[in-house]
Image (cartoon, rainbow, N blue to C red; front, side):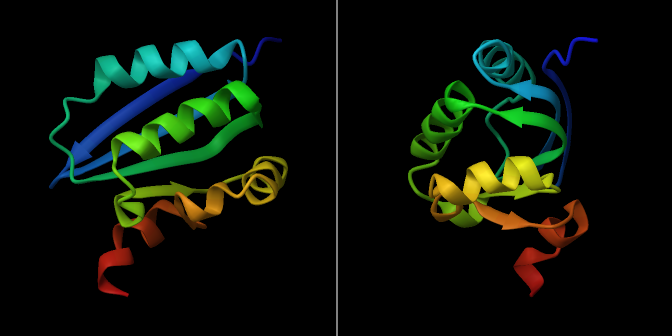
Length: 116
């Protein structure tokens, strides 16, 4: 069974939620970028990446996430990642990406992060 990259997005009150599933690796990174460009209109003030369905995060995926953080000009509170599986969280921690993205356990926690 293939774990091809799939994205679902929703936007409400300036918050874009991107639910990624599959592998964000050399094969999935290109598809991630294409789908993100197609589905994001640029009006969101906050981007939440729901990685609960992500099964793998490779170096090509990290490159895409780094580029995304640069486009946000270091606005860490605008870039949130939720629901990472332990294998994905380990990669995030080991590579220092926790400094670029605010990492939380759930979408609900992301949506209420402003009020914490």
